[in-house]
Image 1 (cartoon, one colour):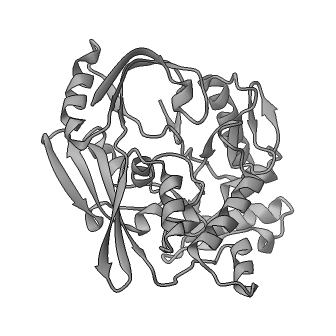
Image 2 (image 1 turned 180 degrees about the vertical axis):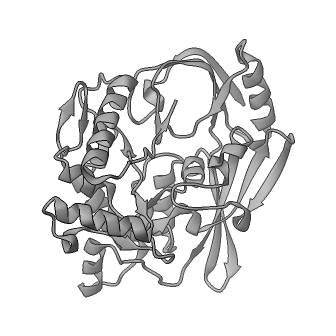
Length: 348
């Protein structure tokens, strides 16, 4: 079924809870409706402009949207045993990602537990390659079913063609903008114990006497996130606002020199060396060092427990309020450390 609404308030549909309107909202709940939903969107406004939006957890509306928004609301999932303790879980793009994770953890399946409490839909997580605590969504995706808008046909895209990288995928490449609409995502999970506990607080689980299960790891992640991050039901946010910068070897050496000049002990700088020798630095640490944690600018603020999060502090923040704070942080970090932070959140 396809539902069409005009001049819709988008505040309930984006986790930043920014007030903006869309000329048209087109929602469909079955795979077979995808072609008709796209055609409806193309004819909905004089410009023919449209965009595809999932759970609205990684988006910032800077202004009203004059086109149509297409929302895949395909829900439900099914499991298929593959043998050797492997299970294929295929979920609709409109399924709430954390609901799927909770279910797989209760079933004793390993893979997605470290991604617990990431807001948004399965489709959005697959497009964004959402990640947390040493795990990325793409690590466990085997294939994606989508509607190829240009070719006008359903396609199955295998893992090797999804081009996953840090917060990016095939779908985020400039040349593929508007080419696909994700409908179903298949994950390969395992009943065999394979916890990933490299992230600091998770290591505590190894010293506990209790048996480590996916549900136990999930609960630990949920506790950590609840202690650091705002609940989107209470305070509007888009999760991690900035990507963690990655420096090449030469740039890392220059950065260390800057640290020394700023009176910061190089050994105190948190970082992670990637396989190619480049170095990832937590954006949260850079923002914190610039003194932004807990600061407010207009109706927007940096979350007091996690400086990587920008929140709609008063519930009345506009897109321009959020952008003003974003630009102030970017300029401050660049001025002090010579690193330009890049937003993870998509601006519309």
